[in-house]
Image (cartoon, rainbow over all chains, first blue to last red; front, side, top):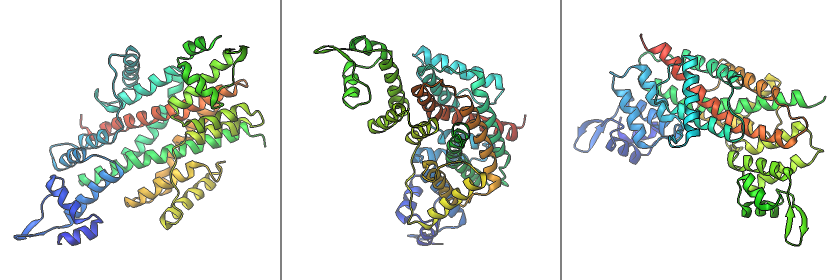
Amino acid sequence: MKVSELSDRSGLPVQTIKYYIREGLLPKGAATAATRAEYDDGHLERLRLIRALREVGDLPIASVKRVVGAVDDEDIGLHDLLGTAAYALSPVAEPQPEDPDWRAAREDVDAIVAELGWRVTKDAPTRDLLAQAFLALRGLGRPIVWTELRPYIEAATIIAEHEVGGMSFEGDRGRAVETAVATNVLYEKVLLALRRMAQENASAERFIED
Amino acid sequence: MKVSELSDRSGLPVQTIKYYIREGLLPKGAATAATRAEYDDGHLERLRLIRALREVGDLPIASVKRVVGAVDDEDIGLHDLLGTAAYALSPVAEPQPEDPDWRAAREDVDAIVAELGWRVTKDAPTRDLLAQAFLALRGLGRPIVWTELRPYIEAATIIAEHEVGGMSFEGDRGRAVETAVATNVLYEKVLLALRRMAQENASAERFIED
């Protein structure tokens, strides 16, 4: 197909498509004349993925490039590919290694991950995210205790096993990353909304006298 | 105590304390002379709450005022007080009633809440939040199905029952709201970080060949 059709079918302006080609996110089309190139369904698929990363994942071009590069590098296994996408999509907490309270919170996180036996890399952004939340809770006079954490760990495990267990790609690495975007970004929103609804319901059950 | 001591003990500048008094968030101290006022532990408690709402909840002054007003109005029952805090602390999605896809997503949400029998008000911001996520998932070619939602509902229920079940205030309405802030804002962060960690672990279990 011509670039105009690729634009129509992807819903992206020709300018944007050409920008993605210049940035190396999208392969060039096959040259059919000096100023003509032919595009195929592979280009359409790739644009779908870029769009998900940009519009849903809200990623900057540099991060999209890194993720797309990992999709194209078949030497990178599925776990590391999904990890590249997940780390890029994760919110980031700034570590504060000079603050002893922050260091203590981060040590608590590391101890919890070790205790659970979870396979989470030492430099996962989620460790700092959790440390930041622990630090803020301590600031409110609510240090973390195991009994408080248990239900969250249980809930997180139920969800993660469902999410990872349901993944089926048949070798389509781009689709695997699209699923990671939907899961990490959009099902996170689903979870947060449902949790707040469930809270309202539990509060009604407990505090409203019928 | 004098305002200077109130400032020391609350960690807030005298200027800020006077601003909160002018805005009606904090009651005036008892006048002891023309330019002197005496403050007590009630003021300190109230400043703790305001600080939690401002710094942790990131609420604008107008919202803090509404929440603090609900704390002081003993005619408002505990469920409605917690609801006032929770709605103020909830992210908000803009409804798009002209968009038929948005309306369909919102109808799906209402049907799910009805099916679950959850006591969630018609104007809860969480309904629009969930509709927004449904709409975005549909945009990625992933319409919502019950089997996909089930684990999130289960997880949300586990967490909410723990959170609401563990609430114990002995009549201290301000403390109840402080707990709502910590739960809604900070334990939400705990949950999100743990879920992403559990994903990484589940992915390692499934995709890394040892």
